Image 1 (cartoon, rainbow, N blue to C red):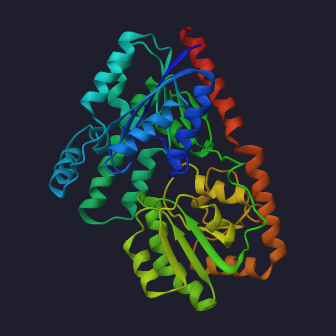
Image 2 (cartoon, rainbow, N blue to C red; image 1 turned 135 degrees about the vertical axis):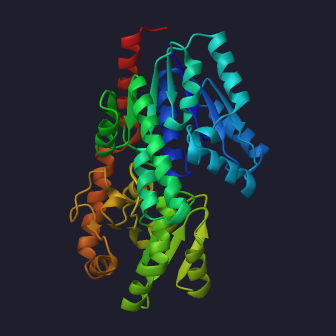
Image 3 (cartoon, one colour; image 1 turned 30 degrees about the horizontal axis):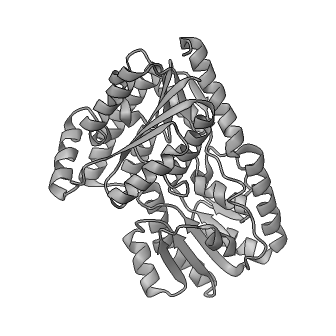
Length: 412
């Protein structure tokens, strides 16, 4: 069996975490069914809570892989230290995030793995782990892109002002160089959508690019007729420690909800996800119709009880796993064009598109007044996910990519 070294910039556990975590967890599990897979992961500060949580995650991941080792990044994110990192990244390469993922002990552990046994292929889960490529020697590597990061940073800069705008613009330009260089050096680049593939190809014309979409555990995320739906209720789920999600919910709290509530004062909304932004927290404190739950272990009951799932994302790339989860559960969807870009959904067939305040109020009202339409969208959305986004099918696609890399470079 060929040996696979998988390097991740976070610990992909539990499988119900944020979108990138879900993607990595399920792709890792699929890879481990086919290859002798060894995981080395970096855990950002507070991502696992404490050392016990890290050890639990390491044991759980070790049960689905040949070996799993998680290294905690130092919890020194004081304002002063962060300011130093930002200042350094603002004037030179490497980027802020490349610096963030430098870990001497993890690098030494990787060297030891490569010294003690032959690896046939490596998987790097983000371009910001480029600093580890030099350790691989002749081992061919596949480079995963959860997003085209330079594109995401550029969009983020558009919504900033002052120093932040300048910083993210510079980081976007530096990341373009990173994606161009390591996109070309990777044997294959994995993107989550054809749209992201086109964007990456513009930056790195010599890169080999394959689309491996995000997926859904369609058995776990499924409709349940026993869950009663609350009329005129909305739900959103997504970690708001990711800027596009935080921006979306700030827009919802400050513009969309006031219009929705004025149109129909009986509406309610539930917002789910870690680190909700201050405007959302303030809205929930002032308006009992809005609940901000933070992180929950299981989003399914909340999504199943909602009449409409909303996705007001205005920034980003990739594909939205929480959108796919909601469609698999059978909820009708109202989303911006950017909120579903790259997935392949058809407006009017799988969801209702709403890109501004007026469109959002009109779309939500339309679904509330036309249960037949809401039902048709829900059925079409789940059927779409079943056909295109089950993890087993995606695992087969990933395996074919690895096999091509192994054929090109020889096998163990």
